[in-house]
Length: 156
Image (cartoon, rainbow, N blue to C red; front, side, top):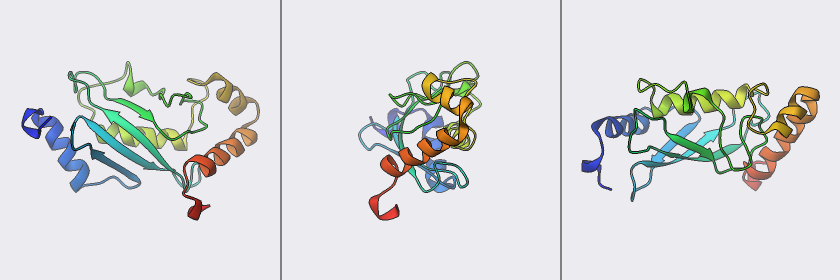
């Protein structure tokens, strides 16, 4: 898909993501399909995901921006709002989506979700139960997953 076939809005958002990157987030469109983005989000400081780099994929459906982007984690993560397939429970990816929102808003919201997991609206009930009953154990497991799956061996 060439850039000429993309809506102007997607071109402008992509240009802004490249020219004004968000701290701790990179989003690069695939060369062969500019609706697909390879995303990397750094784990926020003072979270169990700190020092991890999480790979995600983001896809803009044909009806974007009327419909939200599809986003999922490719890196395994221990988080109550992310299931084993990497799907993310985030209101703006579902019923709270608005065409006024942008790719960068979505990525910032996912980064914020890493800082503030919400076990009361879980996608992975087992993780949420641990988070609610024994938060220290949940944080420990989240750190272990981060070390195992989101860090290069040189960073550990």
